[in-house]
Image 1 (cartoon, rainbow, N blue to C red):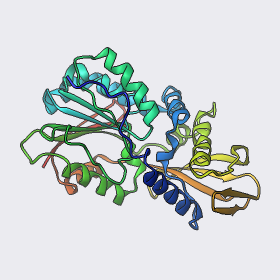
Image 2: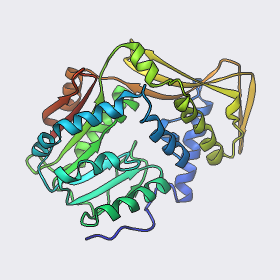
Image 3: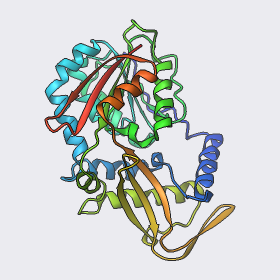
Image 4: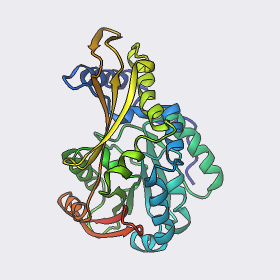
Length: 325
């Protein structure tokens, strides 16, 4: 058994990578349409707030996906095969993957998340519950590159990406991301594949309520990204100067989240500044929704072969297993 590392390897621990993150943020904040990547939601507080969002009545994706896993997990396990190297992308608290340990019987668990501190605590708790499963947590930003160490065997890798997180990418980015996953899998016939949770197109009212709940938890989650940016850039964003905005763009089939300035203001950071006028927005997230045929076409174009899908009774959500083609 591989012992649990007490210190996680992290791309965010080296000065050069910190500088890369700062450069990325400054470029996005000074673009004509200011933006902040949704990966910066997940500092320790942001990760906790997302856990709270998943318990909200309006936020159907988590419980709907959980119902699909509960109903069809044996069929999924049969499709995947026992003994996979389970690579959990955006693992968070690791709960979704842990719920499949019994049926998947992974020979190694590799949770990957950008929030190193939160991931470390989650995996320490999980290792105590499942001491027989070797675990190798990796703290990294996998959105642009996926560099797995040699200690993660290539044969029978299963990339697990639930929660419709793929929807945070635009269509071109999602295709490129899937191609990178395919490139990290073994040749066809050696047991590699992906297990994805994907949110489907549905009525606008349902979608908008899920991203703008009555209690304001999603608003707090969105606003907290400014506190994270303050730490990374030595900036002076004040969350009270901004409000949460979420809406469904039917033409693009995506929910958009923004932060809107409540007044004219100037935000400063080390070496720079930007003026925001009242009503001006910072784009923080897209959450694309999918059709069944769109999912199959997307996976085929990315180099995946046989695909099997499971749905809830309302067909609001899908879980898809695709083999390496």
